[in-house]
Image (cartoon, rainbow, N blue to C red):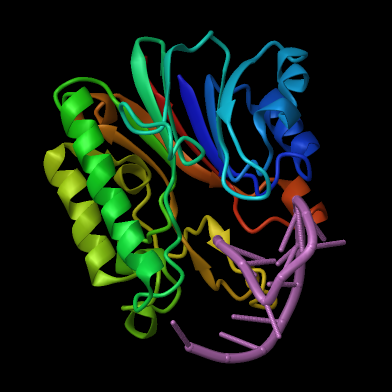
Length: 256
DNA sequence: ATGGTCGGCAACCGA
């Protein structure tokens, strides 16, 4: 089983990139974030035309998540349990009997702003969602744009960036709780090198060449599932260079 | 709480 995640930053702007990537890599599951379209505008038929299923929840201009899969997804849930208000940031579906949670975590803007509190509260709500609805001793996949680089190796200048948004001790504490609950960072399980990034800020010139990146897109799995993972990698697809993109695909394979 | 650039859309936005 091959799974992947990509912050698409507008599904309309990058539909062909995604379709080409799917046809090249044939993932079983692909999670997208920042689709930036309402549900009536989502290009569902484009995915069906290449024999994939897709479930999604979006809104105008901002946010939006989708899960694309070879097998029809079951038990689709949008938002936190009993509350669809965060549905454009959280979608859950069961595929191959494995619950897949796709999140677009609030970015937080700056640690001194109220949006940062909102981000930390969002992590708390997500923790409660996992704790209430899933079990750490069963297979569970959590993928998406977490908007947090977990470790010093995940940013280009950890000493300088510590305390910045997406690399803040409060965010690291939040992520640590998910590890204690039972999640494993599947990419880190297989790749120990630093400078393995999934995001580069558009506003930093020549960011990719200068290695000014962040590893903020993730594939995490419960221990039982992570044990079955065989490899993980970041795919800077050639097309991303033709059509600039601030995020890349992150991919993992499982012996299932 | 820099400034830089995108995507979307007409917000001195959000990332």
